[in-house]
Length: 172
Image 1: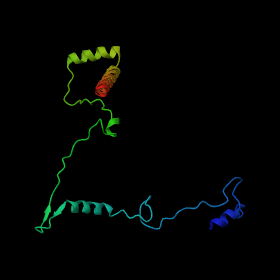
Image 2: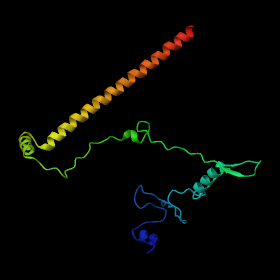
Image 3: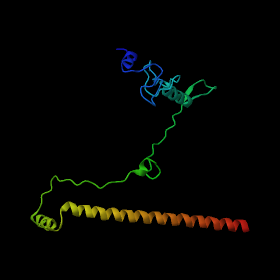
Image 4: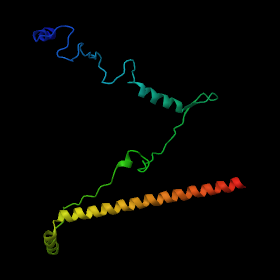
């Protein structure tokens, strides 16, 4: 069935909206007629650009000297360095979690079971672990805050020292 005929059967008239305050003109939709992916800008063919960049980079490493007429290849080796967790914007947000304990090969002794029984009376083992983890987290947070404070103080002292040196040089 034709969509125009379908709408007319419900009382629609050409040039009018379906309901009060509706759109009078249809929404235009772009139709893809090529096999490129979504978001591909028309007129830009970057599919082979990576190969050209790689090829150009290798050509730049070739050294052709006019005297001997030979081609020498100089390979510039670069040492891969690790990513600094403090300087990388990605790694800066990761927080190291608590390690997981394994249970394979662990057999409870009779002494261990007595301790567990006492713990069960006071509170479950999971509650105690949660409390310990909370305390450790709080302690780590406090230590981190202290390190930041010391770092700021060190930075301020360094700035003050530089200012004093500038004043001495300017008065001389």
